[in-house]
Amino acid sequence: MTFIAVSIHSIFLALSLSCSPSTHGTTAWHHHSNHSCHGCAEARDELAKIRLELIKREILEKLGLDAPPQVRPQDGFPTIPQVAKYLKYQLRHDSATASIHTSFLADELMLPERKAERTIVLAERTSTRFNLNPNQVLAHFKFSDELMSKLLLSVVLNIYLRKPAKLHPDSRIAAVQVLVKEVVKNGSIGAALAERKRHVDLSKDGYIQIPIRVDDVQRWWSGNDFIGLYVEAFYKGENLALHPQQDSKNIMYLELTTVEEWGRRKRSYQEVCTKEMNEPSCCLYSLVVDFEAAGWDFVIAPKLYDAHMCSGECRLHHAGRSAHSKITSSTKKNAVSGCCHPTEYDPITLVYMTQEKELKIREVPGMIARRCACA
Image (cartoon, rainbow, N blue to C red):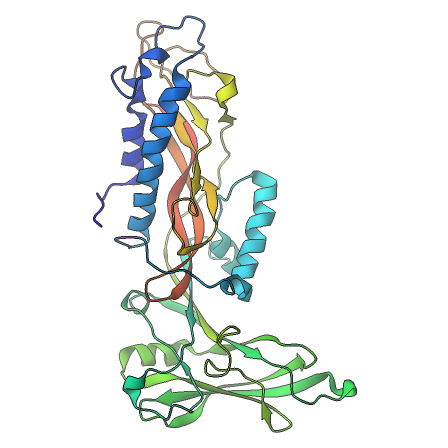
């Protein structure tokens, strides 16, 4: 599938051609001396349909995708702590402002001048092409070319520890020595890449995190010997670390954070108009993008968001509502001039899965209109 490469600003300008009486049946917007509008709703509905398609194209373009990945994430994926943390953030944020509009990643990482992306690479069973012992326990990791082209900031290995087979009630909290070892193509296990002691509640299963050196991961990317990792987390002679061969749901995974420059600034937001206002002037309206209804199963969260749209007339010297755009040009009173279009935008944060089955938490800039004006 091929999409036209066009900036979000150009898209919104194209949609704002509603200021022309020949576009999308907007003639009904003109010549109403009482500034009410009886044909605007139909015109806005047509604009909304067009904009929804353009928004989907824009999101794919900014994610670097030619088409929606044909993957269906398992129901268990949102139980990954990082994804669950984002979902909690989203719910908390929605309750306060009714839409996602700020940077979850940049706020959390305290990188206000950078656009952060987090990728979760799930461990897999080893492929038969490596000719390894099928009973060998290890976590195989594959990295996409797109991921390896990024600037790597940090790496964390998330390991699921199961409860020991036998546990004395008085030994519920215990220190577990965790060793992370590299496995190469011939199946040999090297020295420990990371070694940490973790105090674990052995009465319940759960994830622990072990940081991995960025230099080690970059070495894996530049070479061709790396296959995966073997983790030891022994308690009384029993390895509690689960590998893909032992559990396909509570899976081991790497969490990689990459960054690229991206500026941001805080702003105030324009009031959102509703159909009931019957407002003919340039105004910001709600426009919900529903990924689930679109069949985009690869998007894990959010399932929908409000992208907003700008719609309405641009009249010179039109007083309008105080929260709406103000026209300062000086020509014939009530003459139509310019187009209603967004002048400020916000990003959305998407949790999604690529065709390579990498789980990404990524910001997509410029996908929410926040303020409209005539120009």
